[in-house]
Length: 137
Image (cartoon, rainbow, N blue to C red):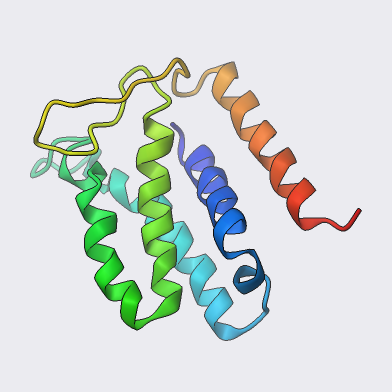
């Protein structure tokens, strides 16, 4: 998935699970949004890094689990958990897939090719759902 789709999917999960907190207009809610952006894009730091294999450990379920310990002490840090977890879930929708238990070989794969029209439509549909959840009727 492209970075934009990762951000949209992370925002969707944040609205689903933290809607009231997300729109509270407090300093913590703004920090939450910043950390959500970081969390949604952080797993791809390994794309141009020669030390790590892309979609390796940075994409595993172990990163959000480790971040839960930080979030226990500081609520906005849950955004990092949501962001990194949403990144893996979105990658699971692609043919390249997601190995949540890296280094184990178990992989979840889907049909949406990165950068394809299907990805654009997927992102647009998620945005439509987000708007429906947050705009008054």
